[in-house]
Image (tube, rainbow, N blue to C red; front, side):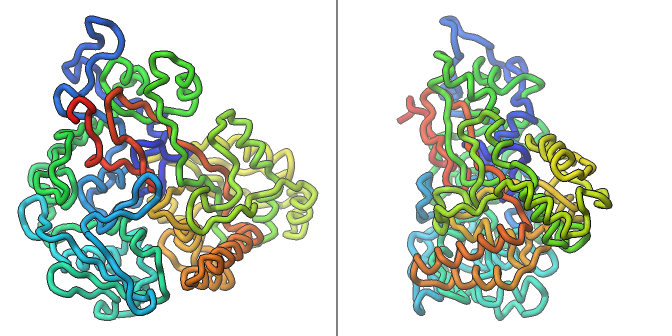
Length: 546
């Protein structure tokens, strides 16, 4: 799941992607106190009463690019979609897979079939029954060859799924089957113990069967969902969510959630301080002083994030179709020093594409190593000694923090001058997918807690999010072996082999991991992101109400 540039996801929102701390830098936050009809202070001084008194919550976050789970792939959209549409499973803050619409699951056929048992009595928010057939139709929409989801590759391990989305197979050949209204069977190409985790992705959430014939089901006022909340209002300033009385776990404790998209020019910190926000992501720079602040310090949340920032190349066109050039860029820039100079102790240099804490990650170092002599030799081997004759290329980002250092070091270390373009954040990922830049920034946060979400889903041949179009048979074989391994040690060895290939071929350069920072109002319970960087609003409550 992608997230906004320059900063990893903050603890508040994310999988199609994750709320990014960059939101706090770009969107200056929620409506003013006057606009919300609130006082900016209380009689006793300090932060005014929170939304607890009204049973509501005000949270800062981006708007959804789409309310259709199959049509979005950014973390901001995922944060909202995961509240209004539910998946079969969910991931908790510890990264463990928990039941959601499915009350249980079992494996059959030596791990090549997963059978989900749905909870009895499931309903959509309009009262219609939610059945196993709705699950299958929702997943088939993700694979639709006429308009496949950008994250359709999550289902590539299902028998016939990839062939169908690529227009090479028919619908009947996809390995989904139902038995009655409560059982969904998934046939897999290889044994895949991680499929229940994959099923937690917001992309695979269950939608009403008439979503394509009655677009109104995605609109405020006539919205029909399967999640803990329904959409009741949407403006440029705010998305308003109302508790779903038919939610399988019962109505959420907080009845109304106001997801604010602007602060009217004020800082998120000041809006939180005067009581206009109950939860907000903040920048690392604000977090560094707030941690020492007697008043705001207790409200600070600092959470590691299952995310990685990386730079990648269009490997199908000169000059980056030449591995020597890619290696020169990998070794000719002191990536780790640049990360350390940012002064953020929780934003650390990446040692692989797979963030810490995920299954399938080892302690081996697959990160970029600065070696100027080797970089210059690689550049000369590509026919550009000291950068002479190197074509003019453009680095495209949304304004990431390392960009200036990259440009300077390419000039100083390799004699290469490049152009630089910043794309609008609202359209950044759609733009680079539509037309791959020569060199570009990506931020990725876990769709599910597993190494393949950062390897095969991003760099496998022909997968939907392989923006640089890199293809390597040995890498694909290693990923296939890892996914098919019954022994975790064998899977680990295969994932490590895949990462060694990435380091050697340099289609992408992992740069940094990070943490998210947020302020949470006193008395707000449950505001912890899961391993996808998402907060489940159904688990939020005000302490006074417990």
